[in-house]
Each structure stands twice: as structure tokens, then as C-alpha cells.
Image (cartoon, rainbow, N blue to C red; front, side, top):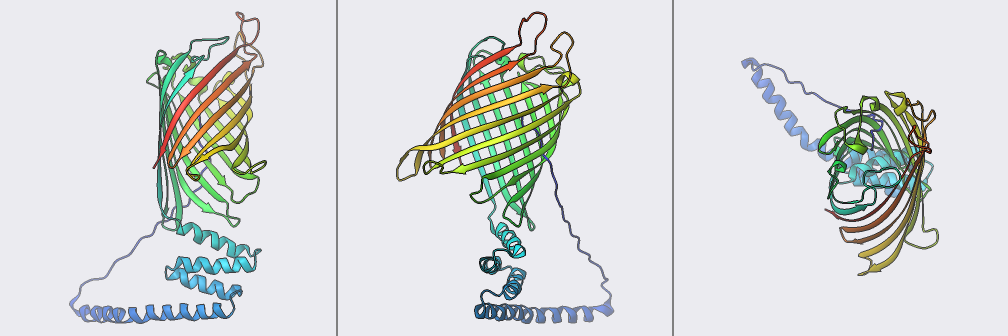
Length: 406
């Protein structure tokens, strides 16, 4: 379950005032004023253009002069000539890379020039699970079909970049209806470009889940994603806090829930990445994470640490690089420690999850095909009087998914 993350937004509004009265004695004055404004608009615009031309001649005389370029950039932005303003700030940064103010203005103008885009992705899939109910010491296998839909929208609201996303997921099992699950989440918030080119995206999030076609939970929260730029090893960070509310009327096996699971959840993740370590067209990523789930009931309260590592390398290419095939081994490990004890069970419960996997990814234009395998091994010291040892469940998952982007 993806829970919400931290938000900070600035909303601006403006209002126009209108007033006056249509008195007969004022008609002549109003008409004269309108005439003066109309006659003066043309010369004023021409004067601004002349000023911009004069400033550009000064830039040509001394291209590395920061003060002249700044005046030119400001004048160009006032006239809506954002590309000219961007070029001026770029000249300053090239001549003086340590000029943080010019770099900040360069990144701001660059973000304003990015066009509004809306990206859609539709996915279809089939999956086999050897232990669909996640039962200890083995269980029933089953097949499932999957459907995913995602929308990512980037645009500007005034002078502020704004990003929104929507994700929907559903699966349907051949025999085990109780394991059918539907999920959706949405987020929205501004995107701020920092001096070093990093982008900070505060968000407000909402999500919900249904199990066996009955409501299971909802969550709302706030968060922040930080996107870095360049070839450095730090590739991104995300932080969040949210509140999750579970129903107490859904009794569907692995999705069984109660009010004790209602929780405030804090999360943090950092992503590190390296490109072209041993060959071209390869990427290694590791993402450590931490979660604290402050559930209402002490036996449902826990903290968790973990990490996910993945290596992606291109193994084939066709049609001049339009199509590519990638191999991606991955590995996930998690450790969870529960704060409270449940009556009749272990006094100090802790769970460990180890999940190695492998993906074969084929891409062609806007289409992606993914063949995946995941071995999921969950171990716990959680036990009661009927178990001599702790519980453990293992599950093999094999999937084939097809995605189309447009």
C-alpha cells in the first residue's frame, strides 16, 4: 500500500476592482481618458521594444557582463520573450558557474518554457501465484488477470508548474475470488525548481482499496518528492505522512481488517543510481526505505526498514535502436518489528521478507512487454499454542504484462 506524502503549496489569487458612475457630466472626461490611453499604448509598446533592442546591443558589446544580461533578461521576460530571457541567464551561468542567483532564474525560466503534457498508460497482464492466499507452509495456487491505468499530467497554473497523477489497478482470480483486489490513488501539487536544478514536488494524496468487491480502506496524506538532475549518485527522495482508515466489516482472508489497524503512517525513501558501470545502456539502483505505522492497536503497530536493489542492462537491440530488450535482476529485503503483543501469541513479534526476482523487458516505440518472476519468502516468529515454531509463507509469482503509452 502506497501511503501519502508531505505537501506544501502556495496558491495565489487576484481580484479586479470596477467602480464609477455613468453621470452625464463625466462622459466627456471618460472618453478623453480612453482616447489618451489608446493613443499612448502604441508608443509605449514601441518604447519597450526599443529598450530591449538597446539592451541587446549592450549585451553584444559585452556578452559576459552579468548586470547587462540580467537587465536584458528582465526586460525580455516583461515582454513575454522567455526564450531570450533564458539565453541571457544561460550566458551568465556559462561565464560564472558560481552565480547561484542567475542559475536559479535560468532553472525557473526553463521550467516555464516546458509545454503542458498529459501522458497515459494502459496495461494488461496475466499472473500465476503458487500460494495465492499467502498461507503458512504452502497453499492454493491460482491464475489472475490484471488491468492497470495511469495518467500523469504536467502543466502551468499561472507561473507555477503543476503535476497531477492518477493510478488504477484491478486483478481477477480464476478460482479464488476472495483474493480479488482493486486499488486507486491520486496525487496533485506544484513543482518548484531549485537553484541546483532539483525539483521539489509537494503533493496531497488520496487512495482506496477494495477486496472481494467490498470496501477495505481509504487513506489521505501529504508528501514531497525530490527529483535530482545530472549524473550524480543521488537520484531522488520522497517523504510522507498519511492516515489510513480500515473497515471492520470486510472479512476476506488475507485482507481481513479491523479498526485496530487504523493508523498514522510516516514514510521515507531515498534512491541512489549509477549508469554505465560495466557497459553502456545499463543502470544500477538501490532504494532504502523506512516506515513507521502507528496503528490504533498496539499489536498492529510497527516500524519497518528495507531496501530494494535492481540492475538493468540492455541485452539486445533491433531496428536501429527503436526496439530494445533489457534484463533486470532485482532483490528486496524488509525487516518489520511490532511494538505490542497479541494475547496468546509471541511477546515480541518481528517479520522478515526476502524477495529476489528477475524481469525480461522488451520495448518498441510506445509499447512495453514484461516477463517477470518473483520468489516471495516471508518469515515471522509470530506463533500461538498450535504452532511449535513461527509462521512462514512462500509464494512464487510469474507474470506477463503488456503496457501501451500514449
